[in-house]
Image (cartoon, rainbow, N blue to C red; front, side, top):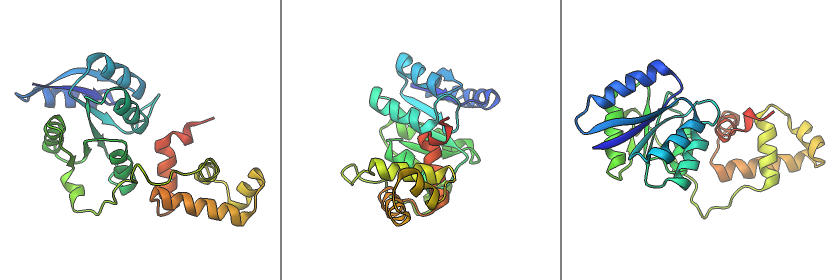
Length: 208
């Protein structure tokens, strides 16, 4: 029997997921959480086989929750359930160790396949995404972005211009451009939209 923890902040959606999972002969819901912080706490307490994790949740977002769970509870497989089909999201979740990535707009069969695959130690990508080219996540031994590159990327994501970033950090505009270019190359981000998405998933846009 596959034990499943549901982490989804919309109660009606969570109820539907519970009914779906519990209707299967080989799986059952052992716990539920309405935000990322509760998801981590519930998972650590219940130790389910699979955690179904929404990306956009209050308290702690899905990416941060996934990172925490991979480090603190490696025995639990993670299946992401989200409406986002963007490659940037897929890359980030694969990079932090998610076993499955399923779209909310897909049929319920996709989620069930993903849960079973994850419980068996396999990877599962939603059928709607399998035809889309997905760039592999950055290898663990690839160069990480520097603190200065992170600062530039973060300020870019919240809307500061290169000139404003240069003035704030006390560096030349050209240097800002170099830091931004290097960070985007290392993180495999292709444009401002990717930068904003990446920042959102890192929780940068939620900071005061």
